[in-house]
Image 1: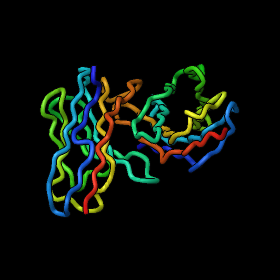
Image 2: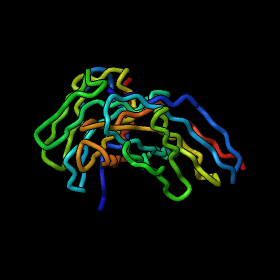
Image 3: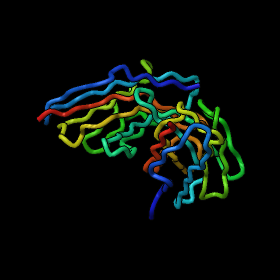
Length: 114
Length: 113
């Protein structure tokens, strides 16, 4: 049981390049989330998918797009990377988008944009 | 909208002592949940404890307890008998209704031998 997996673990991009961060969960969870973590800022929600077929913006969606490919997979795309997107990205999942369901987190992707 | 405030950027505690990490929250939801996560230097997010807004008893999980004061909108984490392995970032978070978790900025706890 792998839980939530993310690829890649590390990535360096040049300004303007694009890339997709992959996330998959094997817990049959309905809801999935993308957060970014910056020093001193905690985790901020980028996008989430409450259930398969739906996606919603979070607190910091600008510069990102998401795809809920199926129940297991939720990808995050940077179309034209900017240095401000240098961050650690966490994917998470939960049974449902509500209390009391805890969110299970992946190991994170450390992205540097030069 | 929910908001979490953690006012202690860093805390120090002696090994084997107890420590309280502060968390206050703001929400207009009647039903909500409060969570604490630990993030060690390795970077993963580890769930510690949960408190529902309608739970009458304070949540406990081993050495972790959540001091829930609803009227004051506070949900402090108490770690008893601190260990060196408790050194980490600690995040308070909440969710209400069908919303995702909202996190505070975290408190870095350092346990001193």
